[in-house]
Image (cartoon, rainbow, N blue to C red; front, top):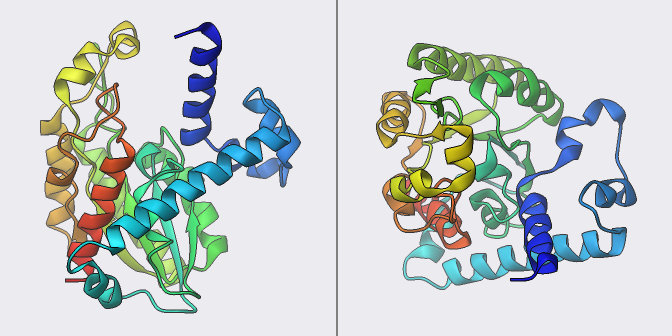
Length: 265
């Protein structure tokens, strides 16, 4: 791989997982030339890459739609025309090829979808960044996948205790529902590929690690909640990028399929 190829791949990855406009709302709307420059490209190339992501999401949705029983599950989903569905989350949801971006192409015409997820978000950051933005959206439904960044460890030391994660998730739900009246669906954090995580150079250098046991603790808490919960853990097995943490596009489709199976049986 040449240096140019590596730079292109890195720019594509950054663009896939990061949307600076979500973190810079206080600056007002950012136009395409400004956003493109942040990724080291021009407005035309930036727009073309976004269109490519969107086309891949349409293709993933079409592939899912063609699978047995999927049409019936889509028809049974609770989201109706005129309703607004909003996603909260971290990189698994902020991914421009995410399960939520695929889902929006499966929903009936007239269902509006907004993705507020921000890569790297902890539950505490979601309370301070995504919750305020949610209040302006007036959602009918909230789909929330958080907790994976709470359980990351540095040199084996957990950064956030389970009690704090649970408290933040409860606060996020209770405050959002009190402010908006939205109906709520949880998605568990996805499992990792431990071997890939352990072998990923950038994680090794930073001392970063994740444990599926820690992720399971968050999932167990969510599964004990009264709200609907999509358990994503088994669905993503064998569908991780080289870092062992983020999902491949096929892994994202698997999460969408798990949601369809849970909400539209």
